[in-house]
Length: 477
View 1 (cartoon, rainbow, N blue to C red):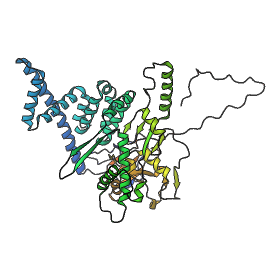
View 2 (cartoon, rainbow, N blue to C red; view 1 turned 30 degrees about the vertical axis):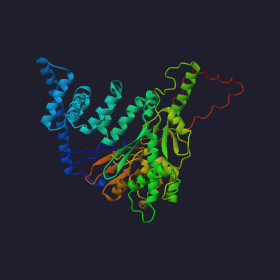
View 3 (tube, rainbow, N blue to C red; view 1 turned 135 degrees about the horizontal axis):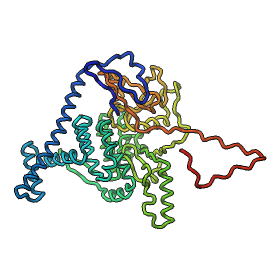
View 4 (cartoon, one colour; view 1 turned 90 degrees about the horizontal axis):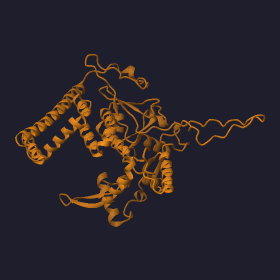
């Protein structure tokens, strides 16, 4: 999601720049300039707070470095002793724990020294403190080599995206850079799977299941689907969370679904796996080459290829993708070159979109298409951007997934939403205060081009053209 409205305190607000050539919304003339309001005041204070946070981090780092210099001047001591002394003084001055003081010292050092561009952006309110913390946590965990490669792109994302979207996109960016070693890292991580109980209060507790994330999402999706089916029963008063917990206990304790209503017994989880076809082909070719060579270091590791992605989770190894794409019916397999013939529109013939169109709308968006929302698309309702009763069609260019809350806000909260023509599904939201927000889907649909017609047969009095050799240049697609 990208905020593109610009406010001028003297002139009001004009329509934002239009670098992509989408044009003004059809209702722009009806609105006129946008007035300066309380939201502008909130934004001004927020900008000041972000700037103060950056200056505070610089002061904390200066205090740390001066403490080290003073300690060495007077005889010094072990680095651990100096660190403890610095943490103690900062904690006492700020009236926080030493753990919190240590976290602040580490965050300040990272921003000032390892990520100075992010510090400068924070000082001018290009990003928020939460963006900065996510950037430091994820890039530090990825290691210096990865952080050096993706640091600039990470900062661009932080300056453009809300916190939740930024966290998810940065994780995907780092995972893509680490795709070459993803299989090896997952092989180590999977050995840590386990089940633990954490006692709670009032006779309650938590059951923690540490397992592959793709399987946990499938478990949660199945429990949610069963809970929704049970919630529709007459007289049901439990919340969705309560039903989900009860269904999990019934399945784990009794091992079957006979105690569930008939509508909930046959439900299975569905998870969308997007696998670039060329990644599978490259993996197969690499594996074959590795097998032939016997030693093939790195063969079939997927280096340089776009990794497969599970909706709501992120990249997975090619080996996992092969299992999922060739496995059970519970997995919806979507290649980046999808099969042709999908239903893209039924016009005004039907209000309810067909199943194939619903899947395509959800796959394209990935998430709720409201500004900053991270609810997965498979938990959202399919909305007609132009309402059916206002002449809207049931088609890909008039559909987007919205979570129940934002679906209600769109229709009854004073917002105006239109789908930008030619944008591949981007929505333009105008708030009650007049600001414009553009939300783009996470994926774009491929464009299909017909193959060129085969050359006509040569005339009988001419020799046939020479056959192409293996070293000819590849076609540009």
